[in-house]
Structure formats: C-alpha cells, structure tokens
Length: 262
Image (cartoon, rainbow, N blue to C red):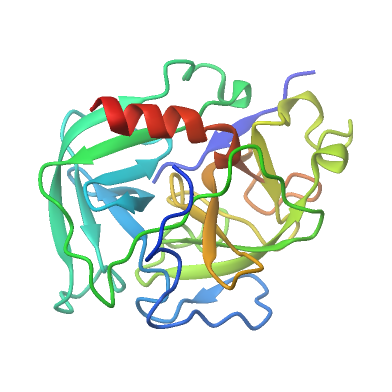
C-alpha cells in the first residue's frame, strides 16, 4: 500500500563547530516554542523570491539543505536570521553560486531517500557569535531510540496553521528504525538512510524542509544528524508517522567528495 507523503516545502566534526555562543533553551518542549535568538547559529533561511526552506551552514562557503527544496534557478541564504518580519542587524545575505543535488534523488519518490543537496556560496560567511558552523556526525554512526534531538525552522506552527515569523524549535526524540519501519508506522517508506523523530504532537511542518535536526553529543557539542525531509500526507502531527529526516551519517562520503571537487 502506498503512503501519501508531504515534502516540507514552504564531512566529519571539525574544531569550532557545534558550540553556540548563546546556548539553546533545552527545557522539554511540547508543540514547539520560539527559539532563543542565535542559539542555533548554523540554521539558515533559503530564499528565492520568498523564504522557501531551511538549511545548515557546514563550511564558510557551503550550505546543506533538502534536494526537494531546489526548484528555482537562483537562491540566496540568510544567516543570523531570527524574526522574518524585522531587520535586526546581524543578518548576512549571500548568493548561491552552485547547487548540487544528490545524484540518486528522485523527485517522484521521496520515500526512496537521498533527499539532500549542497549549495556553494559566492562568498564566505563571516563567522561570529551569531553565525557558526554545524558539526556533522561520524560516518555510519547511529542514534539510540528516544535520543533527544531538536528540529528548528520557520515552518507552519501546525498543519494548516500560520507560518512562523520567529525561529521555532521542538524536541523530537528519535524513533529507531526497528520501530519506525513497522507496518503500522512508516513501513517500507522508512529507510536505514533516514532518521525518524518525533510523532503525535511534536513534528516538523510545511516550511521546515531542509533544516537541521540537531542533537547534542556526549562531548557537549551539537551535531546536525538529519535534514528535514517529509511528513505524512494526512498532516504534520499524525500518530505513528514521525517526521522523516535524511540521515547524514549515511552521506558523509558524498558530502566530503562533493565539497572537495567543487
């Protein structure tokens, strides 16, 4: 039986990554809340004629997002964004020079996986207390069931609800593959190259696509473990249909090779 999916449109660790100057508020969050400004300093807003997706700064001139976000010919990324309705001062707006979508991405089959793209920027981002690099996980590493991670973005606050103007965060515990792939969960739509996280009242929603799933490691640093990919077609908060993320630990060689060759 085919499941209806909704795409959420709307490297290894290096030193100096994953340590926000303004630590995020990680009290238990239900249904999400406004993030502390600049506490997820690797989060970017991907924009063409209007904001479309989120993304992650992984090098001064490289951003990572979802492949399904790449639908226009020209993009810019905005760093140090918090309130979309205001120019607050620290924002950096940089043009995208090159867009590289994973060669195995199939826009007609989101559940086939490979929903990842890399964007090379025309100029380097200026790293400071509000703009910092994400750490990426070790190749083939895994997260345990219920591991606490956070999704961030400016997506809809709930299915059919208003678009957030201020950056939101929500705690999404990981749902291990053995559970997520059960028939009454995501079944065969869940792949080992994906991460399932959240479910019920906690979810990403339309407009969060491409943004990071950030998880704090035992070393105290934050690692971006996933790229926000899709939710169930029945709604963002459907029971037993956690948000699906591209699992970055499966794509470290491709990320490394793509950045080296471009």
